[in-house]
Image (spheres, rainbow, N blue to C red):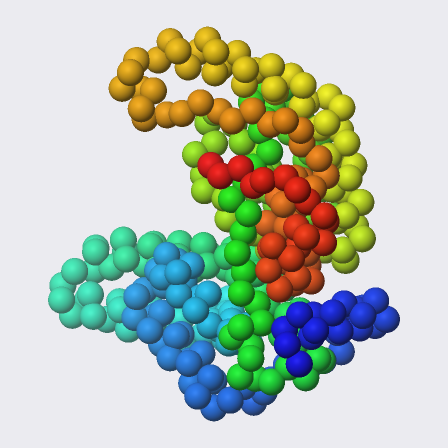
Amino acid sequence: MDIERIRLKNNEIKKKRGVFEKISLYITLLEPKSARRVFDFIDTFFQTELNSKVFKIKFWDYNVAEQYFIIYYLKLHFGLNQKYSFFEKFVEDKRQQYQNADAITEFDDWSDAIYKNRRSLVRQFKKVEKTTERRFKELINLNVPYQRYDEYYRETHFDYRIPLYCKKEEFREFFLREMQEFITKRDAEDMFRNSFESVNNRNLVKLLYFEVGGKAEIVKKIKEISNEYSERYLHPNKKWIAKYNNIEFKKLSERQQKLTKKIEPPTRVTHIDFSKVFYNAFPALRDMYPTKDIFLKKYQSNIAIRKR
């Protein structure tokens, strides 16, 4: 059974049964070599002194089952709110090393940094742990062969943002209010930065991991926000871009013009364009389609993706 057929089956099962919350997850569900990879990662990760950049880069090299248990066992090793844990022993061993080297002052700086790293990692865990758990349970429910776990969730994003160069704060308030119906304010702010193009937005577009009840909620919100943007914000932004390209851009020096570029004006912005930025934010949408191209085909889009 190929990946697309499995996903179609997955969608049918979801409609009938919902999320597979009753499935229990144990490390023995993994192949032995895969379980070993989980603990090798944790061991190596402590050797890097919980470097969050290492986690961001290396975490996605593992299949979804391994990802789930990496987070599960890292949290146990961290021993949050526990007096005795591997983390506390790790810190105490370091204190002894610094003390033996007569460098206890340097230990205080090291200790502050390692606790800060742990707090940062716990925040990162919260962003993805629900997604990894849901995906793992879905694979089990669908009887996907373990050897195919690596290829099942291969994600790519749309390198695209909705233009929002004027009336930004006004639209931002509307967007945050609408999105807080099913995600937190902090998550809504992250999605806003990831989804809308502005003069000062220098961040790269990335995949986000917001879990919601189901696809229907997302599709409804796509249409509501898209309609509001098209009715009240598209025309002012087209005017702003035209003015910038025809007047402001020409005021720049030749060197500045080489370092920047004119802004490509949108001919229109539809709910299909908004579906791209929602695709980037919600794994529930991404998981229903093997590739982003099939996702676009599903929405019958003939709009070219604007590259930044």
